[in-house]
Structure formats: C-alpha cells, structure tokens
Length: 271
Picture 1 (cartoon, helix red, strand yellow):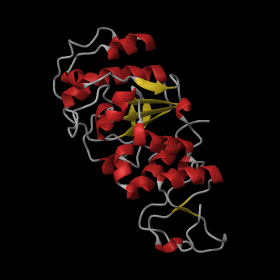
Picture 2 (picture 1 turned 180 degrees about the vertical axis):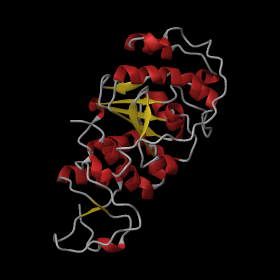
Picture 3 (picture 1 turned 180 degrees about the horizontal axis):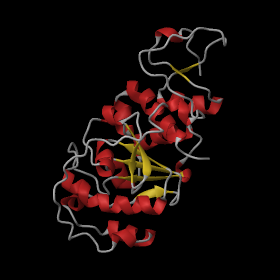
Picture 4 (picture 1 turned 90 degrees about the horizontal axis):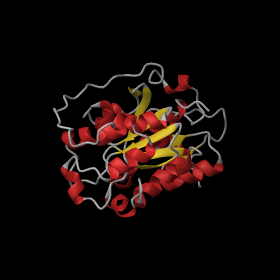
C-alpha cells in the first residue's frame, strides 16, 4: 500500500502500528493508513480523535473502557409474546435453531425464505450483532453475506480474526421488507432469542452493528453517532456500537470511525 506523503493535511488519514497484512486489509476497507517518516516529526492532530492501534492498552482508549455508560432507554411497547416457543431461556443450540427456523411469532415470517439464527464459533470472545438479514442473507441462509459480508470479513482480518473466531448473528432473525426498518414490536420478539444467544456464546465483547442491533441490546434508539465511541453493557457483557457494513459500503468516509470502534472493542478482549 502506498503511504500518504502529506498526512498532516488529510483529516481522514489515520496512524496505526500494524503489520503489512493488517494494512492490506484496511486498504480493502478503504481506511487510509500512514506512518511518520521519523520519530522526531511533529504530528498535528487532525480534527477527528486519534485512533489507537489494536494493541493499545485500555488506558489509551480514554474513559470509555473504565467507565461504561448507560444510554437513554427507550420506552418499549407491551408486546404479546405468547406465540413464541416456551422455554427459550433454557434452550441449547439445537433447540433454539429449531425454534427460530419455525418461528411465526410476528408478520416477518411471511416474507422470508428462511430464518437465520447465526454462524461461527458458538462459544467465542467476540459476538457480532447486525440489524436484520438482507436479501443476500435470506437467499444464502448465512449471516453477513454478499458485499457487506466481504467488508466485515476484511474488518475482522485487520484484527487478525476470521469468521471461525467469532459468532455472527442479527438482532432480527428474518429479513424486513425492502426499504423498511424493523418495528419495536418485531425487535422485541427477536430480542428473546438474542438474549439466549448471548448467554450461550458468553462473549467478552459484543459489537452491535446498526441501530436495530443497538435497540435490541440497549433499548436505545439514539443515533449511532451518539452511541459509538463508548462502552455500554448487556447482561454484564461490554457492548460497542458501530455502523453496519451496508452503511459503510455507501459511506466510505465513515470507515475510519468504524475501525476506531473495532479497536475499542479489541481493547476489551483478554487474550
């Protein structure tokens, strides 16, 4: 990857201590990386906060890692969950897979090809939660498929991770109609499954990629810009909110912010 010879005038440039493989993965993500020519070179801070390297200690991340914050909670509607299978809170993986596959608790079941529980390591340090399956996921029956999945793969590779190292899922288990966000009622139905998944995976950190994921985990409908760059919790597990891959494909300039969120999440994982 060719380094920027004039990084001080590029507010999107970001400084990292990374090996060649990680730098190549970031290049595929569209995140620009630079290094100063000498250790004595004076670096002018860009308007955006500096992004810490993956190996940085928690103290370098700021107060976010030491003092988890609680977002403003949203008043969730009373939802009739009588159509959900009984005993979700005690299900094993086989049982919850069967329950999700046959779930008809809300109207989303009418437009799906298949319900998608999740993929990856069933006991993992990392749990990645997206918003809802899209058309690619609905066709392939796999979480984070298509171009968005390829971008997520590159993001994970930049952290020396792959799909087999993490657990991937979505806040909703069925796709929503094209162009429509999930309703709070739909999120509340699927949140029961998601809570059981968290209990089974026992992650050290949850990466919530999108507003629906944040709503399901944190009961917060605040903009992602207010929720990211800090640490919240769900069932005692640290949660870091960031942009979903589908959004990043359309908004290249925010990829550096998403990388900062991944670095924050990585600082919470004990290796």
